[in-house]
Amino acid sequence: MTPVRSLLAFSGWFAPAEVDGWWGADATGRPLILAHGGVRVGVASNAQGTVRTVLAGALYNARQLRSSLEARRGVCGRDEADVVTQLYEERGVQCLQALRGAFAVALWDARLQRLFLARDQLGLVPLYYAVDGRRLAAASTLPTLLAIPGLAGPWDAAGLDAFLTLGLVPPPATFYSGIRQLRPGELVLWEDGRVRTQRYWQLTFPGRRMTRADVPALLREQLLEVLRLRQAGVVSGLLLSGGLDAAALLALAAADRRLPARAYTAAFAEDDEELDLAAGLAARAGVEHVAVTGEPDWPAALDRLLAAHGGPVGPPELALVQMAARRASSDVAIVLAGVGGEQVLGGSAPARAAERIRRYRELPGLAREGAHLWSRLAPAGWGRALRQLIEEERFAPLELYARAVSLVLPEERARLYTPDALAALGDSRPWAELANLFAEAVSGGAAETLDAIHYVELTLGLPARSAGAGAAADGLELRHPLADHRLAQFVASVPPAARGSAAERQLLLRAALGELLPAAVARRGHVRAQPRSWRLLLEDTLPAARIRAQGVFRPEAVARLCEEHLRGQGDHEALLWAIVMTTRWLDGQSRGADTGDSPWLVFNGGTPTPLPQAGGSE
Image (cartoon, rainbow, N blue to C red; front, side, top):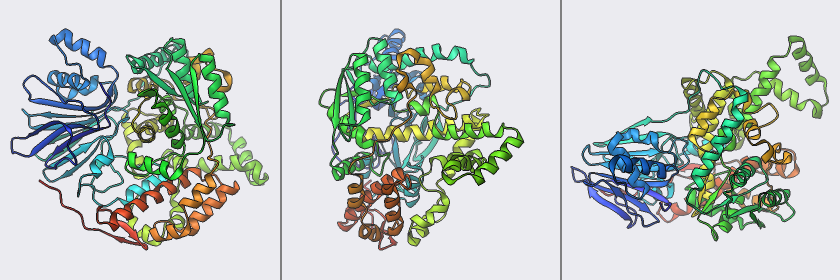
């Protein structure tokens, strides 16, 4: 199947532009559209024309499913949407259980007068939708829906607050009040103008765990399988860094004699250590290495990310993904990437913090009292880590996780936002969705704090990372072998302490690959690449006059963050990137408001002003 940029499904709304696909109507005469946007690929249907399907993304087990269908039914179409159509005829919405890949699917069943939409189990491909009375529109890219006048509504201050707090907008919210998004492993059933959502897949934690001795060999088999599924029948490249995840993929491919065509590494400078490490890994595997260096055109790079994603997106490393992907697109249409390794295999920063606290609590009481006394008497530099540990020991698991991942803490919001912005936010609670996810984890069998954290990282962090990487690689298909829902379920059966320690991450991956990875890479932590022109980027994007005019952030607070970061007095990179992206995005919304082309809610001198919206067409 040819990868597509956007899936479209409309009922009632007209499509924003002419697209190839199926145009029809339901029993009441409402217009229905199923189409691919951007690529001319037909929409699959059954022999009677009563079931029609469109699929965005890829089914990695399509070959196996097609063979099984041909054995049972005698024939199966060649497109992956045909596979979904025939599985649906056999199993109904339960057909989703058999799909393995990164996909968003829309299917119209004329017999039941029902449209169903579904997002893959790990949320690797987004699926956005809007409902207005008896009308529905859905797409796998946010900009597709933004092109429909009157659909998005004003931008949602709570969604923006969530992004600035967590670095992402948790589903079902988006940046726009009129648009929702499906959660990973969730489907929507739309019948007679009514919408019903339900989960068809959720990570669960078994009561009995595997023994550590059995894990490495079994995990290696699983890793080889997921890599083979994503390499089958395609010529692919590899986004290669000096980190563990990408190095693991290359080592597995070399051991399996299925090397990528080329490996691509991006860096802001030619003397970056990352280039040397990646070049060494490529030489060891015997694959051609392509280095992409230099500072991007930052305004253009930011605008491309915003246009592809439909709103602010992070983290800062996306600039490097963008550089490498643009170079790779001249050679291949598909590249492999190590996205998702930490979320699927464990050992994230919040999990390591929880493990440190667990070990601290197991100390004898006298030892804890001595540590507490030392933290108060030790020089500031020496006792900082211990003081932080003692402070975190007071937190419940939810608050520990929230504080570990948050860019802005609750007590810092009043210093960052203007009074008018705080008034517009009202009772916005960015951490509320975290509480829901922790409750879901418990319902899925998470009996330990590390399991709950693992669940939230997989359900919330992985889709955000995948969406960001997809925006950076706009036009190039990224495949993430480490992000596989069956692999994730296998890892959930492993004791939590085996996934990562208080000091080290991804113990499972290191144990499974062993001799395939150089020791220096296997034990290497995550390294962030600092743009050489970071100061210039901040000065150009965050001048006080622009911040003041938008009325969202306090100019003095933004200036303080910039100064502390540039002086090395604080690590505010992730937050400053979020502010940079938000500021650039708000500029675009203001320009749209000035021309009357956009229905956004704009802060004008600190005053929220709703703008007139264009009406949708029946």
